[in-house]
Length: 318
Image (cartoon, rainbow, N blue to C red):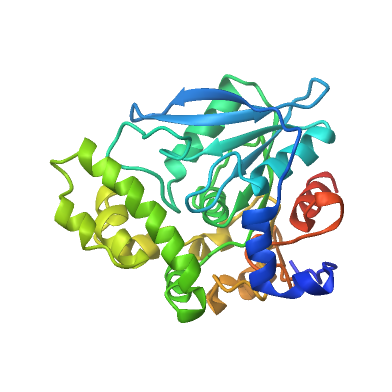
C-alpha cells in the first residue's frame, strides 16, 4: 500500500527522541486497569502468563498486546493499549513472554524476537478455549517483530486474526543490534544488558549443565548475550544466524492480513533497513507510517492516550 503520511505532531519538548523515549519508559503511568492472570501450558510443557482486562460488555473481540525486550504486561505501553480497547468494548490480553512475569520459566530456553511457536499456542488458546472470533494484535518493539514474523511466515493464519499493528519494530534485527551498540545508545544498551545478564545468572543456577558461570561472565555486549545464550538455547548457530532467521523484514511480502507498522524516523534503535518502504509499496495488506517524532515507543499525545494506541483503534475499526 502507499506509505501513510503521519498526522503525529507532539508538543515541542517531546519532539526530541531521547526525551520521548525516556519519559514514556520511566515516567508515564496508566491507572485503573484491572488485570487477572491466567497461566497456560505451552506445547513443550513450559508455561506462559497472560494478564487479562475486560470490556464492560460481553464481546467476541480481543486484542493481544506483546511487549518488548525485558518488558512485561504491566508496562504502561501495554496497559495503555489495554485500557483504551477495554473502553471501546474489546477485551485485552497482555502477554508476559517466558520468564517475564516475575517467575522464572521452567525450560532452559526463554523468549526471543522470533518465538512464534509461543504465539501460535496463545492464538490456539484464544480460539479453542476462549472462543474469540475477532483477534487483533498490538506488538511493541521485539513483540512487533514477533507478530510480523508470525503472520508473514505462514500461508494460512487463522481467519479469526483480523489485523496487526506493530510499533517501533526492529524489522532487521542485525541492523537494530548494530544501532544499539553505538555510542548514542550506550545508556539503553547497558541497561538492557544488565537486566538480561542478571536473569541469566538465575537461569544458570537452574541449568548448570547447560551454561557455566564463565560463559555468563564473558558477556560484555548485547550481541555477546545473543551469541552465548539466545542463539544456543533456541537452536541457532550463533547471534548472526538468529538475527538472519528471525528478522521479520523477510516475511513482510507474504503478509495477507491488514497490518500497520509505525516506526518513528527519530527512533535511535532502528537502522535504515527497519523502514520497509519497498515492502509496503508492494503489498496491498501492509501499511507503513513513519512519523518524524516519537522515539522508541514514545508517541506521547493528549489525555495519556498515545498516538500509536489511538491509531491502532482507528486501524482496526476502519
